[in-house]
Amino acid sequence: MQVQRVRAAVAPALAVAIGALLALAGSMLSSAHAAAKPIVANDARVAGDRERTRFIADLSKKVDVRVFALSNPYRVIVDAPDVSFQMPDGIGKEQRGLVTAYRYGLFAPGKARIVIDVAGPFLIDKAFVLESRDDQPARLVVDLVPTDEKTFLAKLKEARPPEEEGGAAQAIPQTAARPADAKPVVVLDPGHGGVDPGTSSAAGITEKEVVLTFARTLKAKLEATGHYEVYLTRDDDTFLPLRERVEFAQKKGASLFLSIHADYFPNKIDKATGATVYTLSEDASDEEARALAAKENFSDALAGVELPNDSDEVLANILIDLAQRETQNRSVVFARSIVGELASKGAGVHTKKLRSAGFRVLKAPDIPSVLLELGFLSNPDDEKRLTSEAWRDRTAEAVAESIEAYFAKRVARNPF
Ligand SMILES: [Zn+2]
Image (cartoon, rainbow, N blue to C red; front, side, top):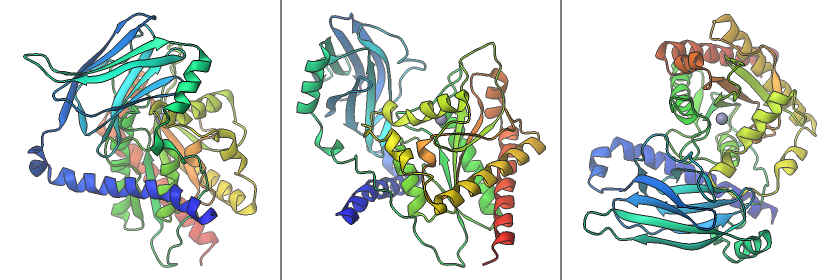
């Protein structure tokens, strides 16, 4: 029973990994693929008021959609196969009627998703796609009406999508064993992706782009040393749930896991700047760390992944035995190494203090895991740095050296 559960948990990650490989192969053959024209969504808007709110998206062609509701927070999810989003910049932020925001992107390879945030309990009164006609584009229309909490929850149960079932089994798979003489595996985890853009600057630079570019640069530097096998959890603009990022690292037999993010500080007066390094802990080191972990952990919810009620359970299983304590110690050693290198290379650190909180993506019990916030997209100076090639190169170099230093220390301490 237990074994099957583990398998069930691993299978989607494998599917995603294979999908990512196919996507990679696909991008290499992009000219061949160009023949099969994807359906394009090129605009969206919200109309109506709190009594009836209508979400509309313009499509190049009619597409089959699956529309359903999720609770906690209130959301409408629209899933469709292969839609390419070419929406105007900056849409999705205005509030109207019951809709407070929406976002869109790849949810998995070949699977597009729109997530609509809703202010309170609601019913999906209508959802349909109109054929294009004359000069009108095809249209996705979703009508929402308000209801009470009880009715909302009753409908939710009724309409529960079958493939979201069973995702709650949270058995943590073991990290794959590797031959003793194999190169250590380093897994780099660019945060967010696809339907979840992460945070963004005033000019619309998104966290998901910044961290992917950085991760690719760092991967190239690490591979150039010849010392490691390096993998990215995602190498394109596809969403990946937090749990699958951890499972990816475990399946690869990772010796080190680095999740890469960029932060946003809402208070304009405080010009927060520079990188911050985080490790996992049950109790947050400080309020800022706690708030950040909550924000990063919200990634799955933003993308419309239904969360099992496990946010406490996940952490309850951590930090209990000696092996995990050893993992924690190593995570801290690695985190110190990054902070030291970044500071000495002048890459800019927000604080030299190590911070910690309950980041779900750092929960692998046997892989030292660290989360690096590269800087603050809310700060225009940081934004300039984060998008500059020179800064990226220097900072990736510093992080690569901190990884070299981490492994050198390990070998010195534990030569076999
Ligand atoms: Zn993030």
